[in-house]
Image (cartoon, rainbow, N blue to C red; front, top):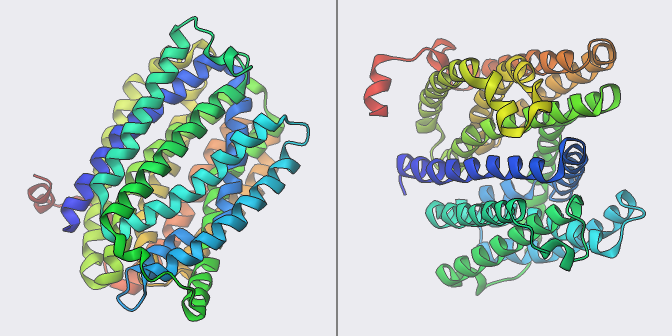
Length: 427
């Protein structure tokens, strides 16, 4: 599949999925209420952190080494079977620590959620290698739509479905059950379809020490990058949770989730750039610059639309208690934009195996966030956290742009100023 087709298929279906993910979040907030939803999404943050740590950055190693002709995919699959078993055991142990007094039901579905997320990362990687973007994204979108419809049914119906599981309507376990079941269904469908289309990948499954060493060496660096990225996205939440009220935290979490949704689109583009860069890095450099210019134009449009309707749309969608989201999102929007451009540049560096530049950028961002939040959030609250997020990611983008210019000799202006010829490509 050509790059343009891959970008269209990958972004098109994922944008549909993103829309329904946003609707899912609205329904969860409506079902749980403002304070309980804050607890749920904070718990979700912990679960995502756990899966981020346990997957050890292996998903990019899968793409990088499986895309090379001298690597047997069956060898990679064999290694992952063993690794996933160890990750499942570690998940149970760590969740018991995080949920000390939880019932077995809670532990079961929390484990399914974490392990399922890890497995989905790996499955997505193999689909990227094969460039099977249509089947991957259609399946994901369909599952998210079904989940949204089920939550909609729970919200408007007066049935005893939740009670049949011995779960109260306002218990976060109910939503965790639905989310875990959706992940399990997605995993089963994607594994089955991949097996039917690529049976040959499973014929020569044996461990190879050299391949294993290379995979874990690459993954170790990618793991550091993944953890740094996670902390960059969520470190401010810790300070807001510690020094602000539950209402402020809930508003901040929802604004952050919308920001994360805006990152989905550049993340999808970056996911396509990565495997293509491995094959032809020189050809991709100017395409990355073009995509940065296009993304800049799109973000300008989004920002002006947000300024027009954001003040009214958030309380209308989520409830009157979410009237703080407008100012939080307005202040943090610059940081979301900088991080979006950074994702495209990062995918290029990962494709040429120069991840040191990424670590330098994220380290600078995280250091600034931690120091500034520590001193300013206790005094100025969530507004300071949002402003610091934007300033920190601007610093990180400058670091990446400087490295990208040295690597490709592409000028800064070519990364942001839209050209007349760009519209011909877009059309």
